[in-house]
Every structure is written in structure tokens, then in C-alpha cells.
Length: 251
Image 1 (tube, rainbow, N blue to C red):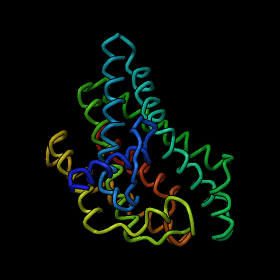
Image 2: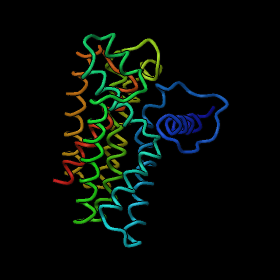
Image 3: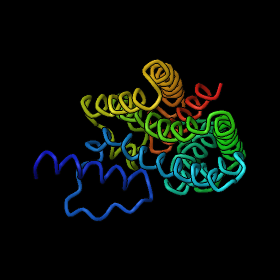
Image 4: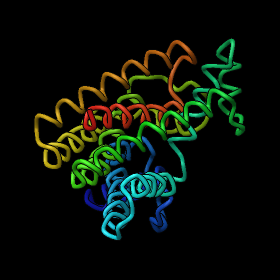
């Protein structure tokens, strides 16, 4: 397999892992850890679809708040609520478990508890309000932000997989662990360049610094709570980084 074909296959795997978009079939799938660098590219697809819905809804005369809700819902449908599910599971586990084993057990339970429900309400509410605010004030920025934040909020996940041990002996966190520094840095560089083009270098820098700070803080919490990362922890990290990005852009 040529290097180009290998990279394209890794992009395909990232899309298959992080979205519900049709990505074809693979005769020979690469290791998940090798596709980490392409996570921001999968995010770009999700954000572009959401931005297109926001543009179409506003062009059709739909009120900004409703258009923002449609854009947000589109992003969730495109990913199958993967990251939102992780946030809810982490909130329930960290909030309701008394020890590491119990926290992990709660996180694996498909039912959503009060902590998870509240986390989802806050996440959806903050993002919806931020999209609405920008859609009213600077519609073009709202569309650009949907793409930019979908990219950048996934850029730090490679470093979590690189530096944090897997909290479980199975699951995505375990299967994706062991990624290389080159993969993690490549994903961050892709996001940095994309943000600089979409938002300008200064705004891109502020945005990335805010998201890195939030994800580092949450990584420390996850290490104390369950001793490492899991698929749910990665989902929660994406959500928190996206919220931090919206707070920076919609301030």
C-alpha cells in the first residue's frame, strides 16, 4: 500500500470511528492509533455539514435561534451523539461512583442518570446559545465557527491517547492507545493551520490555548477519578473543548 493510500485509509477509519457518515468499506483496516492524526479531518466534515444547514436555514428565513438549533442537531446526528454520550457517561460515573471500579461500571451502563442529564442540558444549552448569538451578530462567523470548533475540539484527543493510560482493558480507549507523538502533533498542526485560515492567527491562538487548558485540566481529573482515559473520557474532552471554543468566540 502506497503512503498516500495509507493516509487516505486512515482518514476513512477516522470518519468511520467518529461519525455516522458513509465511508465505504476497508479490506484491510489500519490500527486505530494510526488514524488519530485524522480526527480533526473527520471533525471538519461534521462541522461543514452543520454549517451548511445553518446557512440554508437562515437563507430560508428561519429565525437564528431555530437555525442554530437545527445546526446543532445536525452535528449530533452526524456523529450519532457519540461525544455527548461520552460526556453523559463521564458525568454519571465521576459524580455517582465512590471508587474507581464503581465509576467505570456506571460509565458502562447505557442508562443516563441525573448527573449525565444535567451535563447534556448544560452542553447543549451553552452551544445552542453561542451559535445563536453569533448567528444574530455575525452570521458568517457562526458558520465558520461550526467548522473550526469541530476541527479543533478533536485535535487534542491524540495527546490524551498518547500520554494517558487506558482506564479499561478493552474499549476504544484501549484499542486507540499507543499512538505516536508524530500522529498527535500532526493532528494538532492540521487544526492550527485550519483555524489560522478560518479565524486568523491571533484568534486561532487564543482558541487553541483555551481548549488545551480545558482538556489538560480535565485530563488531570480523569486520572484522579479512574486512572486514565477511555472512549467516554475522550468524548467528554471533545465536548468541553468545543464549549470552551464557543465561549472564546461568542464573548
